[in-house]
Length: 71
Image 1 (cartoon, rainbow, N blue to C red):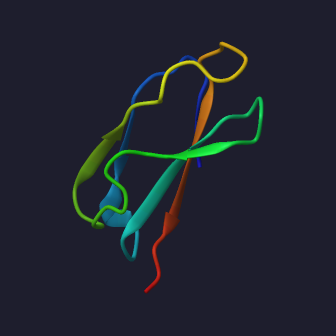
Image 2: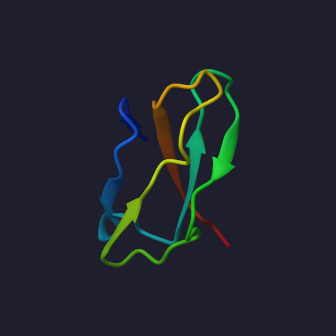
Image 3: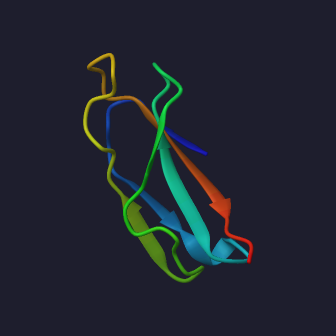
């Protein structure tokens, strides 16, 4: 998980993951999630995730939740 308080883009090095990565944005004000673009991603190189804008409380904070995709 990665937290962004001000809505900055987050760059993640994916080679540290042992398999394909699924990512979603978690809105800390409601508990709702939405898929992050590009997921699932191969565990190679870097990927930049851009938050979806303001959350339900009109703030910019989001949590990027990444999980390994299992077949």
